[in-house]
Length: 388
Image 1 (cartoon, one colour):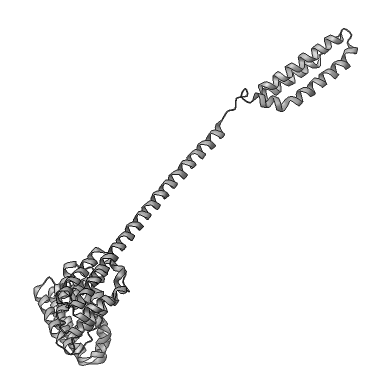
Image 2: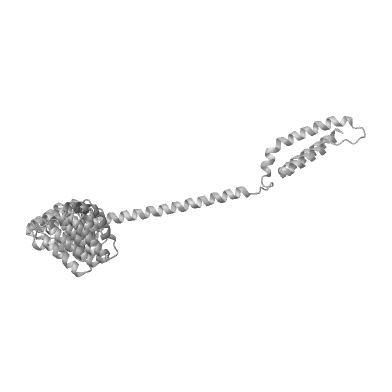
């Protein structure tokens, strides 16, 4: 029922441009999300008819039409290849922009679809001055950015490059591919570009352009895979080169090898320097951690330490000595004032008070302080005995 309804909708859309424009969004929504494989396949065929009938209305939806080439259903992909091949080869749809989607179908798991894609590119190469020559750099950049297997990429590019036969176009491709190196920093894309260069049929002019363009790809020569492809190019060049060109090719080979070794040494030096910096950083981090642990241990010992008065006795006695002299003077004066008043009553000597004071201070301070007070008491008693 859904398939029949969609066919009826597509027939009404072919009849009237306004009705077609109003329902294009609905049609593309169904062709992308319908659960039925038959519905998606029928809608794909209908899109081809609508593109022939109303090309200006379908032109903004070109990307969505190419997206049918990625459908999980083999029947939908097959119909998409047939529809797009018909539109492109009959100049009813622009080929630029999304042709890489058609190139991926060259390696489709379904052999029928793969053969249809090969037929399409074979016929396209026969049109005018071979549009594949102009499309190849764009196809290359987009395929290298996709998550393709290396074998599939090489097979696709080998087939497309094989369709270019003119020497002038080959020489032009050398220059175009070399210039692509200057705007690329990814190793995988360097490898793809170098592979494509190695698949070209080099002429003397092509080899000269490759040598002259050395500055554009010199930064990529540090990679062994890239260097291997350039060695293949040099081996091909030696076979057809005349004596003059052969000497230039040999010099170019020496230059490549020398530059490759220098780049490898620079990379090794940079890696060693980075490893040394990492090692130094880890050692510094360990030293900082060790110092932090020592500081925390020292803080802990300071907070919990109990000071033995006997250890700091000499310092305390040295500090408190003036106080002892003061006590001695006070004791002497007191004894002089009290002695004349003695009449048989027992008068407490200031010595007793001094001893009590020194005891209380000894509990709060240091042991040596008590010794100082005791010595002061002995001196006072001696002076009193002398006066008596």
